Length: 293
Image: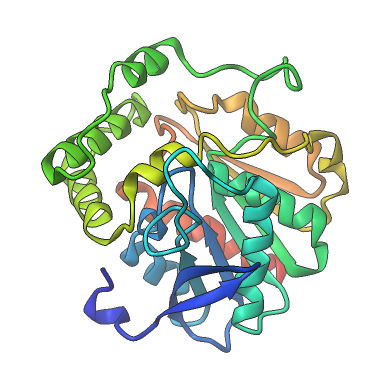
């Protein structure tokens, strides 16, 4: 699903023992930026135009399919043979595949959690961190101070029924229905954009059912929140003020507990990255990268 502007820059990287599909944008001699997608999302979550803006002709931006998404290694539905720590090692393997020593990591939601683990376990590989719509581990027994998902979100999400995974129209409708409750109250839902994205995901995925089931069935990862104070990379936290998945106190916890952190609140924004806010987000990230370079 590579467009004409990036044709020929997609390759398969053997990382941490698995094959991952990676796409590059920008100048290979510039500062490297590794994008980490959220749960169940392939590299397409990072729109090609967003990637081009982020590269800006002077940075080297990589987006890739996590395990069980897009064209990367896929496991049978309900049988993931990995956990979040393995996905963090995959990220390091992608950098190895391109001969990159250290990169600026940008992670959204679960991708932000992966980025935190890379920064903790491989500090020399992380030039800076940007965490969008993320969390220091999510609410639960280990984090009783963090807010849970909004009741409205939980109700709407639970009402969505599994599709016939061979039926493109059903799968597109299913994916769109999951995206809709993620929108913040201050932004219109970008239905046309998410329909295009859902169709593209269906057309290129090895097995979309694996992505939707396996990322929620991964092996448990030991809590890492008590180690956040050891992160040495300059960090930028970008978070929607109306995020129904990880409410804003998750961002405040990250900003409070990771040293050398700036916090950018996007009022009216939910859990996803709205296209009208791309320029604001890109500007914040590139400024952060410049400070850290």
